Figure (cartoon, each protein chain N blue to C red):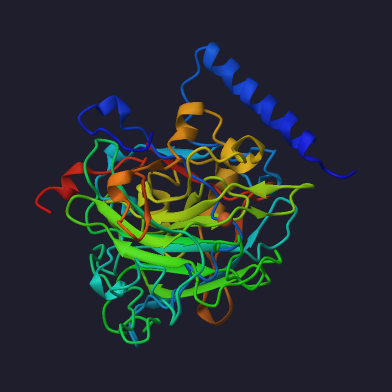
Amino acid sequence: MTKIDTSRPETVLPTPSHTVGPFYGHALPFPGGGDIAPLGHPDTIALQGHVYDGEGNPLPDAFLELWGADPEGNLPQVDGSMRRDSSSGGFLGRNGVEFTGWGRIQTDAGGHWSARTLRPGARGHSAPYLSVCVFARGLLVHLFTRIYLPDDEAALASDPLLTRVDPARRDTLIATRGELGTYRFDIRLQGEGETVFLEFQ
Amino acid sequence: MTLTQADIDQEIAAEHAAYEKRIADGAPVEHQPRRDYAPYRSSVLRHPKQPPVAIDVSKDPELVELVSPAFGERDITEIDNDLTRQHNGEPIGERITVSGRLLDRDGRPVRGQLVEIWQANSAGRYAHQREQHDAPLDPNFTGVGRTLTDDSGFYRFTTVQPGPYPWRQHVNAWRPAHIHFSLFGSAFTQRLVTQMYFPSDPLFPYDPIIQSVTDDAARQRLVATYDHSLSVPEFSMGYHWDIVLDGPHATWIEEGR
Ligand SMILES: [Fe+3]
């Protein structure tokens, strides 16, 4: 029965999750999905990495969603991430000026992803981070993790999540400095070096 | 060794029995599938083995995950929720109208949020490059739709009934007809990707993906209800499917919206 009677709270139960499957590529990704930073913004950061399975093989059919605050720590409530062209029905891309804070990036055939966004500012008790949601064929429920940036050791040392996680696994949540000033963040779904994934309660 | 439907049937039955036993022993109802549901083989190397680290959202209202990205009229076009009008000609198949409400756990509507769908055509073929099933493509059907929920949380799509399709996990593996849904709530913690099924599909018992939801009542919540009042005279058959987003959210963020 899938007409929910909201006057009976005991019947308002969650809709189960399902895998995104292999055939979302013509539906969910959109051009410029990872170009989250407005053009020429001085606080732009570039992020890139791979997504690996339990045997260390890259996932060619995963996608990530990134969601983060602007450099002042404010979360935008601006639409226009996937602006559409009402004449052709195609995608226009972002307008290059407004920051929506959200992007969607598919891994390529080699399991690699990349994005450009604004350096997030701190909010609440946390060190600055980007929220990440991982989807793939084989994942019956998506996975949440976070990308912390390596630059501010003091902020990382007092972050409520980082101080709680197993020290041996803490570094899976922190990007590393890579080539040309980009940040590298690999996601390992299973096994050695398994990324710390999060559950919100 | 070739993997047969009988092998998968046995594994599904074993998982179901294990769940029934957990419930009998006092474990809580599982509304969500387990990520390590082996009858769905793609999960075997892709599920974390470490338990997730729990975050109590009540400790910090400023968590990034307690806010959702915003979408608006710029992100959709007027005909995006009518999958039968995206090409010059009419797609082949039975036209259907699919509508329902997007709700949170408190039964409150999620307003103005993005709903994305994708599906196979009426022959069971996706308009996707890597799709190997040799059923015909339909030049008048892409199978992709988007809409925003209205002030009561309602979404509505016009499309054609998708066909079931084989997927090669094991010999004679067929997916029941379904429409994929992607949903955003009022908090990023409520993010959901799922699939909607059609009533009384004979393939349900054989499909390890729908059976990954081992709780019988939870699995039923993935199946739309035929709704004659949604059927459009001389045009389409109506299906009603309400969606309830899981995951904690900060109620104070929504006030005044
Ligand atoms: Fe599918």
